[in-house]
Length: 180
Length: 446
Image (cartoon, rainbow over all chains, first blue to last red; front, side):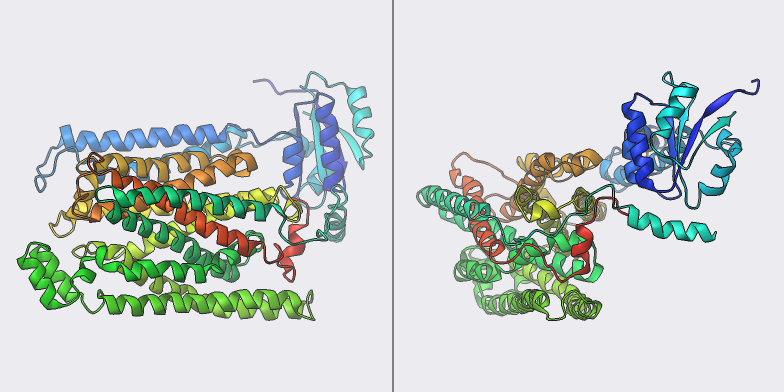
């Protein structure tokens, strides 16, 4: 894949989470969707302003769990009923109470692993390069005391002049054009 | 990095500017609605009590009335005991969920005197419920065996357990268990009021003094309570079948208590949150936390119940399996399956959802449903102990079994009327607690 060039987005820097949340709401209201906020600690309001709570992670978890349940149960049923049928204490070959715990463990294992790796995959991780680190103020402040909102250039609403005007209405510390 | 530190300070103060910080409501007493609910509960109790009288005149009706009363009584015992346990746990663990839930829990515990009075009919009529009470000494048990009222196993086991299971020791044990519970409940409730009236209220010294005092009583009493309630449920429920042994029985009841009390507590708070002061104090965050705790109890409950079943199924010992066979065969599998579905499958699937745990209107129904599931479980535990019902769930010629519908509703509604009465007596917020201020902070405050 050839290296991507051009503008990645406009990055606004704020001193407080409130200003960030305000700007995010404004941008969302103006129709922007391809945007992300970066904070040094979790800010629930920012996630809410981004309408972030609806992710596909729960679905991945559910599918993983169902896959685990099916795998565990079928494995046990196959072993005990067809693969290696043994007469243990004259119990029926299909003794479901004995199958519950391992099937449950498989459910937990599969759903846990699929949640973890599904979350990483949906986040696009691992990621060795991110354009935002081209912005010096981001590299300095994003993990300590600054709050950033990035409106990305691939949003249909994005326009270098208009988007900058919108962000500047929220009185940020700075608005930086970030290159790919 | 110097700047970083400065900004962390600045963020905290500015962090609140977006949301107006709420103030403690001027009036903290319970809203008028509570007395309306109390009257409704009393009305339900009277109506279902009167309907239940019909069962005096049907075959096996009197027996079923008494058994159903025991079921209603144990449900109320679970509310009071569970509330005491959860009250002590929140004093030891701390947390904002415990602060907002405290006064409803206290109100539940203060009904202990009603609970003690409600035990009297069971104590007076126990010879109609328990074999060990009908045949109190070794000689009468032997007579019962010879005349076919007891099997040999029942006669021998009941005789060997006579120290614990006899009318006089039942009186003594209930006096000790309920007496100690009443003592702890009285202390916790008295201190809670004194805490608010502390002249030094609002200072760190006062916070620490009361926190330590509550912790020192609650910590050891949690352990003692578990022992006491285990004894109580063994005497009054498990001993309906003297031949069965279970080392997890008390714990199952303990978990069931947490399950029921949390459901009732959340229900109370949501209904109260339509009015001040709970309207301002009950945030979605705490409701979500309690929902998660409720979900944990749903899991713990099925874990204990299934673990016991699995162990007994694997052991396949003739001493143990009849208890389950009596509860699975002869139509009981319907109740047994519904118990698992109502008690675990449905609440488990529903409470997985974050949105439902945070929704007031939906949690009302989830909690109400879970309280009904508790009643079904209690029915499954109690009725199959009796020879006419063991492994034989039937309604033909046994119309009295319907008492299990009306009597527990009457008994629980009767108890709820007293609970609501107690709830109305005190301010709904315990003010002299650092968590009170935290409850007024905006949600997700950092």
